Length: 113
Length: 110
Image (cartoon, rainbow over all chains, first blue to last red; front, side, top):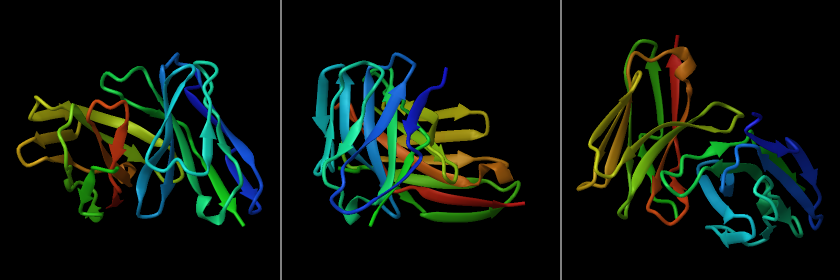
């Protein structure tokens, strides 16, 4: 099993560009989440999904869109990149809400110029 | 909103010493979890303690939970250089999401 796979690992964008961060898991987990990690801020939840077709906003959803058409994939879209979105993005998945032990991808380091 | 708040923020110890980190939270929880993050990597789950448990062990890890004080501690015994990492607590209050703290950076000096 590959676990949680995130692509790309690194990305540089110009202000106003759009892009999609990919996340895929092969553990048949129902729950998937996107976090951003900034220095001194810990992890902040952007969006999450409790199953295919179901998504909800987290703590910092503005400027990001998600969809969950399959159990395996949970892409994160930046609609119009801003320098404030420079961060490291992590995708995570978990089997269910019970205990909710999360498995993390290796992260995508994004710079917006 | 983030609930977990770890204390201290940074810790530097000699190999073989014990490392203790604390975490406080604000609301009732179903469980509290600790994760480790090595530099440049994703987080890895270490241990989970349920709200009705007071102490739990896993190898060199010992976690305590005091729900009356809304606090938890993580003890790493006989630390090794490989324990150098950031450690995060995360609370689960049953709303389908985890709330992570800001993290503790631990440096173990060989």
